[in-house]
Length: 283
Image (tube, rainbow, N blue to C red; front, side, top):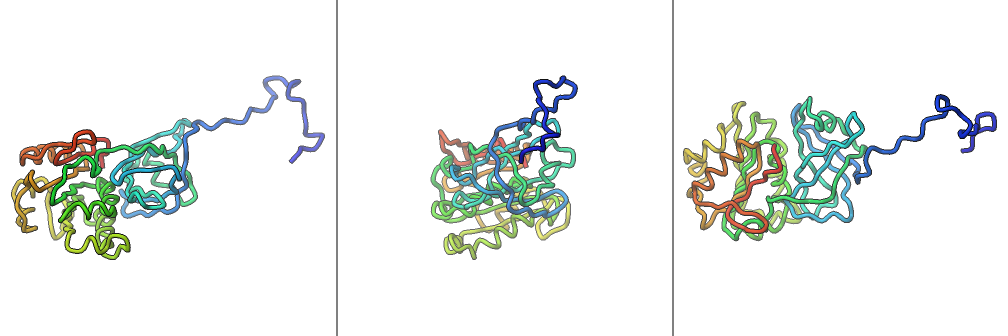
């Protein structure tokens, strides 16, 4: 719309004090995606879905950098595992809320229609390519470390490659298990992999603070042998067992020691072995 003549002025003749400010350029030129859905589980946990770039290709279990613009106008980016499987038309993420966190203090308030920054360069070690063939696959998770397994549990290759898949998820309170529990319970009815899951999936949730049917840290339950007794299976064996680990730094280190103590070796994309740990993701 053209301004009326009495509102038009030759900017070149104006003094610096009276000239209008030039339009502010965006603080970044990073790609963005639109939020399509948000769900809050507790005052500490929420999930959200976004549109997916047409060019984005990733392996289930990988992560990308996502973020928002901070108060200083600069982007704040963090590594987030993609919780949706590689075939999904949208992207899903599972996040903790940190009230004074640089990113999550803002991210927890997003609504459908908002935009987030998403760098479409997926990487990560929690992928099938980093493991040697085996019979039983373990997913060990604490907190939001469940996110990459939400992707892998809905990946057909998971069920094609293994005779048995066991997902352990340890949280402080029962409500914090909701995201993982609902996803696991829905798998048998999944139109793509439902029949593949039948008879292969074992779910082992535990809590460390609030009372629940199974209490205790998963590391303690492994070391005591209670986990294996509960499931009716033998202890970890490098000949048959493969494992992925995702959680807090302390948990990852403890699990690394346990797995190596059982004779399993840590693998990578370039050198597959018996277990992998997602070092870039702390849940």
